[in-house]
Each structure stands twice: as structure tokens, then as C-alpha cells.
Length: 345
Picture (cartoon, rainbow, N blue to C red):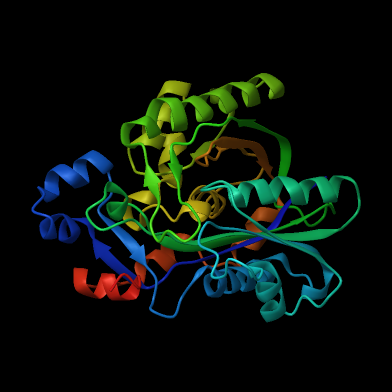
């Protein structure tokens, strides 16, 4: 019985309102926020990056898991903003967490689904009994070029999960997982380039929706379940509009989706996006509830999971800090301050 035994999140304290970005570029703030369904986004401190945020999220996940750091058998860090091009984020994070040396480490990069790819890799090691516990983190300080649509959505955060294969530890069992992948380059950044490029509207139908819908259909078919069998659903959130359209098209209700929609007030922290949505759901879920989950990463692919919560969840909820509580702590900054913190100027 493999699944989640603990999770933790980290959000930078700084926020910038989308209307402030729009005003700089003489755009109608109401039109921008209504179109993207985002009102503000998280911004890292000047000295924060995917590594430092990953450490903080990892600490909280380990506290909830209630195991020794030395019991971790693998550490995977998913990000597209690793601090170094050559030097692993995973070993640095593991060192700060006190994992020791007896573990497998790897940095993963697959746009916004690198974290969920890591979760599948940990699951493989658990199911084959190669390890007993594994740590996976999705962490990004996502950037968008000034005056590009990504500037309104790209944000920063980290989300960590400790997975294990002991039945008595599991708070959310993984019942099913699968993936749908293709060579659909809707979003990319060449080595040495500071900002990513994208095909604009191409990122919608052929990229995000095709992969999310295809993976969702496959997952439902494999599990022999229907949307009505789930208490909650979680999708990758590049903006506030896409997950709402995806859920509706697939037959999920607003009630099933709403708890996961953290994008509205923190933006899209790339590899942490769908994982944060899952943590928000786990914060409020009850025992024996099913959660439908589909991530998305440009390039392109989607990973799907079906989770079922256990009676252990309520006990662990008392240990963790709810994402809603963490989101309340924030300091608003101006656009010039935002550019400095993002190392743009």
C-alpha cells in the first residue's frame, strides 16, 4: 500500500497585484484579471530560489510524516528554475534536511509536471520494495518576460511530499497512475536564455487541453470510475480559467474543483502548481474520499493519479500548517520592487 504519508508547502511572503502589472503596461486591469481569473501572485524574496523554498517545504513534509530524515531513500526535485545548470538541487536540499548519504538523488525538469513525474518515480521504487520512504518536491521561481502574458501568471512556491509503503503510515493511498505524453512544444527556453518563449493560444487546445483530457479519459477508463465517484478533483493551473474549463468539460462540478483553485491568489508556480492544489484538498478532506488529479507540463505531457484518503489523514492534519493559513501572510510590493526581487533589473 503505497501513498502519501506527509506533505508540506512554502510560499514566499511577497505578493504583487495583477492590476499593478497591468497598469504599468497601460492594460485594462479588469480585463486582464477577468481573462486570467488571477488577482495576485507570489513573488520570491531577493535571496529565495527553488532550492531554499524546497528546503522549507521539505522540512514541513518530514514533520508531518513523522519519520527520521535518515529513512528517506530517494530525493527528487522537479523544477524549471534550478539555481544551477550544473550542480544538483536535490543533493543540496537533502544536505540541508539532514538526509545523510544513503539515498538516490535526481533533479527533474519537465516544465510544470516535473514534480508529479518525480512522484511516479518514487512510487515505482516503493512498489518494488527498493525503498521504504521517498521525498519529492516541486519548486519554482517562475519568470515571465516583462510585457508578456506569462508575467501576469508566473509565480513562486514549493510543495513537498513524503511517500511510503507502510499501510499504517499512509494518509492518501495511490490507487492508480498513468501518463499521456507527446512532442508538443508549446513552451520552451533554450540554454542561456533568461525568459521562456511560447506559442500563445497554441498553449490551449493542442497543448494543455489535449493532454489533460486525454490523460483524464485514460485514468477514468483504467480505474473504471466516473467523475461522480470523486470528492475532489485537481488540475494543473496555468491560470484560473483553464482548470475550470477542464473540470467542466470532464463532468466535474464546481464543488469538487473549488478547494484546489489556489491559482486565483498566488498565480502559477509551475512545478508546484498542481501539487499545491492537492495539498489544499488534503487539508480539508475526510477519510475514504477519492481525489482525481491530473498535472500538465509543456513539451508536453500529463500525469494522472487517483488518491484515496485514509483514517490516518485527520491525525496528520492536526500536525501540518494549512495552505490557507500560509496564504494569509503576505506583503504587497510595487512593480519596481517586483523586478528587483526577480533579478530582472
